[in-house]
Length: 263
Image 1 (cartoon, one colour):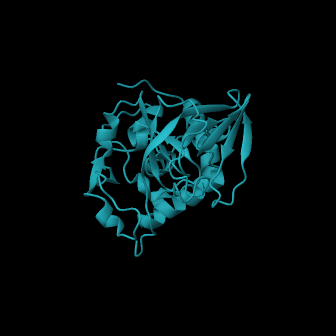
Image 2 (tube, helix red, strand yellow):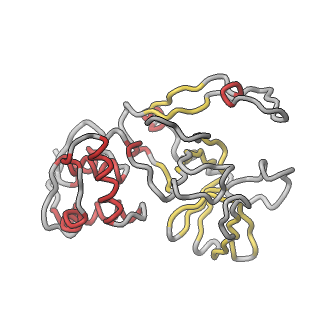
């Protein structure tokens, strides 16, 4: 049985979870309003006044609002409830209800065994990239990969990141809302040797303010974060390694190529 946790301690942990995703209290309110609308239940709505009170430890929330927080913070409902001394076997689901604006590092906390990610399973060995083709014909098949399977992966050697829906740093090579696989063994920046921008290594970098996926160059004790020329974003210098940690090279990606209509 889990030991009882004070409302103050639980509030601090909730605030830390929110701040790790660089979300404001107002943004949480907006996301919860969308969840309440999609689930057709006002019980999932979280006002910013209510959340502020919870974070300073004034009281403990009800289960519906905890469910909303689990969807927004990408933390299992069982873990959130454990903050308050409640132990349950179920994890939160429906993480896809909220698309977060900022890029973050994905972890096995993303959901329950019932969640899946749709991803191309096998790229054809011989794809004619010189001619126009249907994307569906470029892949052998598409399938659903349970999040439970991701939880069994070797997270020490393979990391998984999510490109925020407002992050267009490397667009269109990596579209907002994409999931990427990161090889944590390839942290050294490759200075040259690629034939074109499509082959240029993309790195997942942790900064003091969050995460970024971009092309990189090392210049002395500075790391140059290079965006795609199509992104409209400026290049950025950060102190390296003081203010930046290269987590690894992006080696695979699952991304939507067109907006889904009628959802």
